[in-house]
Structure formats: structure tokens, C-alpha cells
Length: 114
Ligand SMILES: [Zn+2]
Image (cartoon, rainbow, N blue to C red):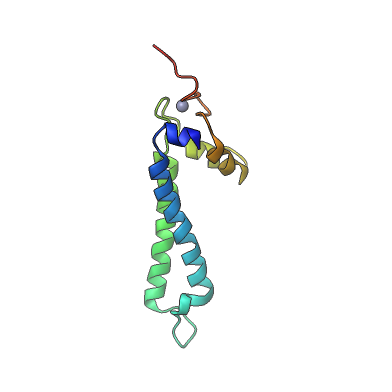
């Protein structure tokens, strides 16, 4: 978390993580029970289906953006991608939240002074 704050990316991380937090359960809820939006036939209504698909797309977009925009300001390493793509799941995510420095260059602890 210290790295996120030091690199000034806490805001965008929380925004995108928030989208993931909201969209995920909505998709699960709609897919399981239709969220009260099922037609009498038991099938999802069109609006429930569209909301469901919209949330799936939002979830994927938010996740993709996280991997792309959460970068180290010092070395440009995609740190979120490093955490979810190169570390074992789900330990990598936990490690990401606990990061106090960039795994590649050590920002902000070992800043290279020119
Ligand atoms: Zn770095």
C-alpha cells in the first residue's frame, strides 16, 4: 500500500478496484437468480441480460486497465500486472497491496539520484 500511495496511484487503483468489487457480485447475482429480473419463463429478461453483460464488460475493462495503468513512476514497470501475472494467485494480489516499494527498481525507497 505504501508504494501505491507514494506513486500517487491509490486513487485510480481504488476506482478500478471498486468497479471490480461492484461488477463481480452483480454478475454472480444476476446469473444465479436473475436479480428479480427473470421473466416468468425463468429466463433472464433482456434488461437483466444487458446489465449482466455490461457488468462483465466493465469487470474485464477495469481489470485490463489495472494491469495497464498501475505503473511505477520511476521505471514504468506495470506493477499490478507483475503482481497478478507473474506471482502465484492469490498471494500476488496480497503482496501487491503490501508492496512498500516497486519490485523492479525499489521506488520510492531506492531512488536513483542522478
Ligand atoms: Zn519501479
